[in-house]
Length: 416
Figure 1 (cartoon, rainbow, N blue to C red):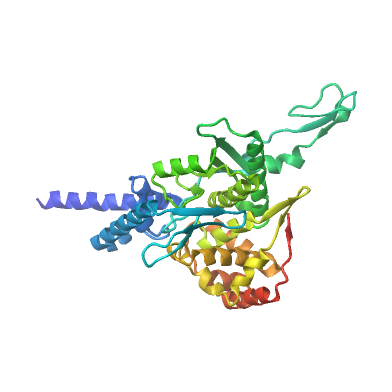
Figure 2: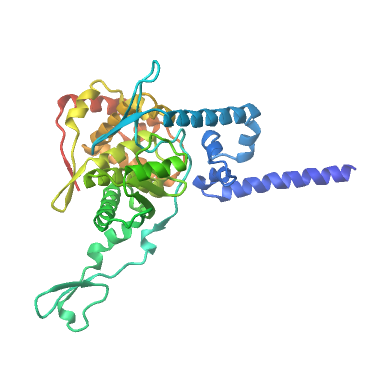
């Protein structure tokens, strides 16, 4: 009897040790995905295991009440989304601010944004490729006897002296994004497809200025482009997604769901916003919500001048941020960021990123912060930690400089 009990205990001990071995043999961003493989993505969102600590002690401390509370929060969130389906909404969309104004219901009125939303950050990092291992496509240019210019993947065998190898000039752009576009229930649009690919290369190019080279990756990305807003909304509702979304990025499928708007500039601005989320996830994994959304808003602000992309400050909107608290924003969690004050949170996040990229200390802070997340995917860090280590004077100094920057109103354009 005692031998049998001892054998059972030994087997249990070996089983628990095996679980820990499997846990730590995974990449940090893969560990939390173990819950998702059980088909409980919503539960993974609520009960988040720390990927940098042993799993068994965390499970031991997890009480049944915690599990029940998480399920109740999930139920409430779904009911809230279902109620929003019945609210009549009037949508006004422009390039700089995509806002949905909802009619007054009872004693409450609120505004929601057609942006990517998650109640809590999931620890996901989509599959990417090392740029050094990507097959490099050759690009050659030559002029024929009649003076006509040609481009091709092979050199002109007739006259090697008149053939120019452009591979090095274009390989960075060719490697940046491995993009596929699907067109549900319509033939597609060659002009929009060409523009989306151009915008994807732009977003990757801008991020490459700040993401350390060791963490720059070729991004795999699928865009589901619907013929119009009505087609997109029909698909969104069938998927039981949030009825308030006007476009979204799904980290689970690593896909962007996007409608074609009547104005191509609107479509491209929203595409840049969502591609920013996708590329940050692919290179670094999850980053703080204010940083993620702030950079996505920054990408939205671009306009083209010849072959250069220009980021323009939203001067008139920045005037609404007088006395803004940057320290408070940088400590805002996902659920609070997308709460009742989300419109101002988006605006302040956009302004904060523009401020940081408008001076050298801020640009260095962004590079070092990206290095932190690239080295330690999914590791949590407070704003105080990131700024105290990477910005002169810490978060208090950054917040003061931010308000001074707003008060002076001397904003410069950024050229890429």
